[in-house]
Length: 145
Image 1 (cartoon, rainbow, N blue to C red):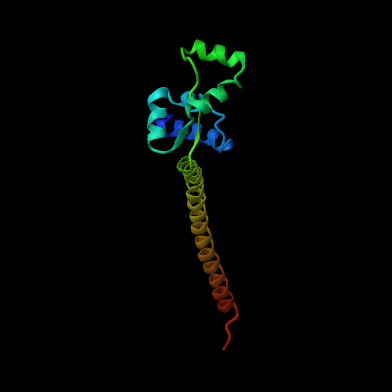
Image 2 (cartoon, rainbow, N blue to C red):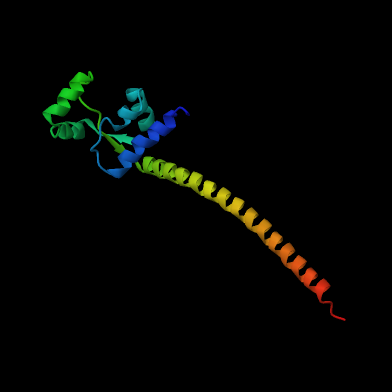
């Protein structure tokens, strides 16, 4: 079995963020899939894939957290979550990833179609030979002069 690459892990996180675009309702999605969470968020922000919420927005969003979520954050050793959302560039990347998956499926079906076309070609040639042989045998049995 092949090992899952970092890009494939990132794709899962981005697709989850895409479902809730354009909200800042997310923290921990990217961190769940990528182990180097803080540096990953910085790289994604720097590349324009995600937009990190400002301090003011973060304070407002932190007020909406439940006590269970605060407890979970403390258990992970975090003081407060980093809120983010996909940027337009991130949406484009997520859609490109979806299209890539579909292109693999299209290639698979194109190869299958090519195989069936070969079989049909050989079947047609075989039927032509059988028909010609039958015509020849019929002519030999009943020649026309």
